[in-house]
Length: 468
Image (cartoon, rainbow, N blue to C red):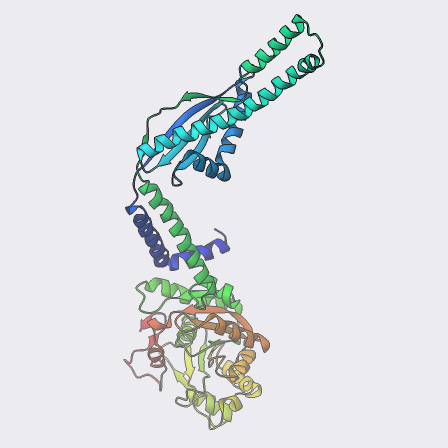
């Protein structure tokens, strides 16, 4: 299945209840439409084209022409009016394979009306066709007689032989039944037809299924919500790294696998030494903390010296980045230990100035240089792209950025704008991670940020594996 087909199938599957509702509605309409349906009655007359001097297949072609002529709506209106056939009667002409046989059928709500209409329509049609053929024969006979009539009018004499030949020619014309319609059966049994409830329901159901699927595709295309990796790539224009289900999701293995996929993607994309990656989102979401912590913890478990830097100065807490940027603290004094030997953290801290003023390219470059002296891998939690201009500085200085999109709050337009802002400062966006932050709220995530070195026995929470 190609990617385009997969996108369409996913959109329909995500809105399967809408598709089901439209299908059920269509079936209900089918039931209502056939609820009062009554049986119909069909009667027919059978005719044939008689041409003794012509092959049957040639007469079959003419029979098809007669059928098409009979089916003409204008002709049927005239026929019904001249033969006193009710307008609600349905008239139809049919032929059988390559046979000269012609069926004239009438369908009505009454057996008697159907039979009378079939006989009346068949008789009127036959009489009209044959009358036109008779008129052509009369014209041909008149043409044969004319030379003799002209001789007699001039007091000429016509020989008996010539008169005999003329009469023989006239007799042949009178005996020619070519193209004429001949009755085979005028009085046929009336056939009762019950309402086609099941075929009608089936056709309505198929139509409902198609309409429901179309509605699902249209809603999926115009929706601003992000549900799948395909939505990220189609609506935001960023490669999708992973889709992380919420913590409340019963499939913990899927969640753990998705987070490890993020860790792997980042590990392969950044340098082996002195690497840094910024984690940010278009707006406020606990998913940034969750993804950043998962990356930092897993890299630390892999034996890599890692430091998790909380660089969102709009959420001041403890002593950390703010003091380092302003020169009011030494880095060793703000590093916070965790249960993992290879992982330490730096809290946001606080600054007496606007975060935009505090975070400059020069200051943040010096901070990263100090952190890299103590770690091989740095994960930076940056403030929301669309809320904090300083995120552009962090992303451009760090070198690599992962964009976190929240299924519950991030709209496709916000994701596109955030990506556009990051590209404008030449930040390298590795891809996007779609998270269900409702399963792990921002309050829960914030509670994981340590305020001091953990005491023995205190639980240390990890985003991927829970308390350790």
